[in-house]
Length: 252
Image (cartoon, rainbow, N blue to C red):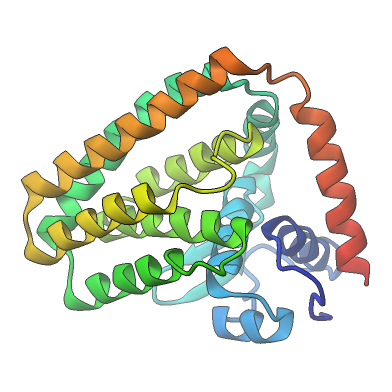
């Protein structure tokens, strides 16, 4: 695989990895390069790669086995996954309010359980993600990817793979409907994520759940504003242009 020479966008990595899987004759269960190998060969950051892998998981093209590595997914389940993702691409901000409520329930439970179960290594990884998220020079796409990685890590700590799969799909709904603020409100993001991190570090399940609830209330308020302020009808045309740009970038 050739390294991506321009701005590291998650969509570019997804496109490139899909092409590798689909054109190299790989079979379900075949082992893929490690995260470290992919970061080096593609010249992208770990948050960008992880977000791309998460999207490929939801498509059924990649399966990540904790402690074992990444493998080509079982194509027998691909059709159902693709149908779900196509629905996600057409979702409107108003629909996202309902998804936000589902996400809120998952996230609050995950924050509480993470505070109860997190190891020192888990806390250290969450702290690295917070530090990365706070970098003022971090490009918007990478900041969003790091933010999502933080939330996925909380769910990973619970050990509930079904919750993790649901969260990956919900995050795609959010991205496809373009409801994440641009530019990011770094001060609010920093305060909330740091508070969650500290609650998990102290093992304070009540505080972790409380701060996550506040975070989700902020998110829901933003979605409600988006639903009333702008239509979602042009999301598909914008997506087409993004995919085309990603393909051009991957071919360079």
